[in-house]
Amino acid sequence: MRAARLARTLLAVATSLAALAAAELFLASQLPIEGLVYRIDEQFLVTTIPESRKVFTRSRENGGDTVLVRFDAAGFRGPELAPAGSTTRVVVYGDSCVQAEFSDLEKTFVSLLGSRLTLAAGRPVEAVNAGVVGFGPDQAILRM
Image 1: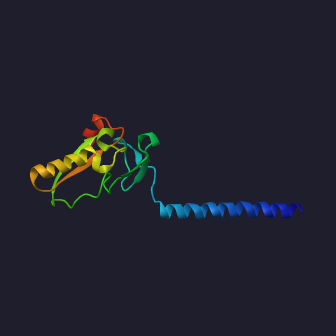
Image 2: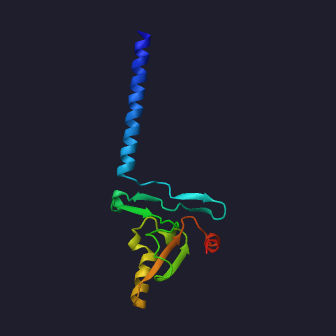
């Protein structure tokens, strides 16, 4: 009797673990959005994790919409950089006000700057968002 109870308990635990693992794999394949986008850095104290992303959801009182924050292979917020020499590039360094992780990418200062510079120049200008939450002037200067 004791052995049968132990066997049922072990079966229940194993089944629960298998179900949790299957759910984790399913969710990771259907919603591949990581939450960790920053890491500790010896030189800058903190920096972005290249090719990371996260979702920020506003409260219902603030619209309830979601913002996808994505970093490219170089750790800049936004799409991958254009090939070197293919366009004029402007890089904006700064803190959370520049990175604007709570704003849609196209509404950030850097994206709006790129759009206005493109109109003024009459040719494409790539504005690169090199802002990092938590940066001060010293870290921005080091990163430059």
